[in-house]
Image 1 (cartoon, rainbow, N blue to C red):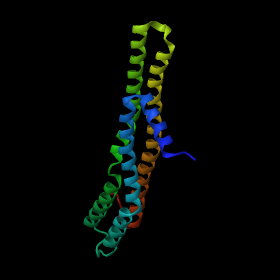
Image 2: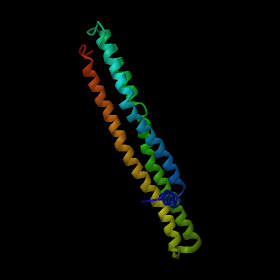
Image 3: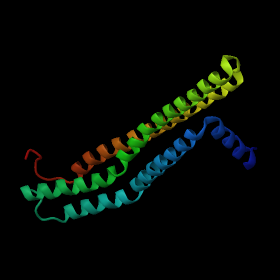
Image 4: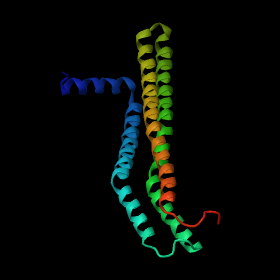
Length: 178
């Protein structure tokens, strides 16, 4: 079983090898996953209450067939779906930012390789390997973070689309041909 000191040491070594860009990627991933988890928490708790409230208000209406009722229905669905989609654009932005930060890590690592080559020539392979390592680790970290965020961001967006259709089905009313 791993000890906490060993886990901390392995993570510290990984971050040192990847360079300072890796810390920025870590911060972006932390914010991205905080937003993703918040959205899933919202789906489990507050969204269900918002749907129940909207359906209850709609079913208690006397008028469900007029043009005005259709607008009330559309506005209610829109409010619930807007609340459901909150932070999804930010998640998508952070997903797009991760590979770009990985590319920044690649560029800074390659600059380190070129500096070593300029100072000591191309014979110092150990120093060059350090720069190549510093270049590839942030790229990998940025891609892994983007893939994981993309999958869950896409699922959140798909869930919002599904909920919008489901709400429209719950709230029976006039034809939407207006």
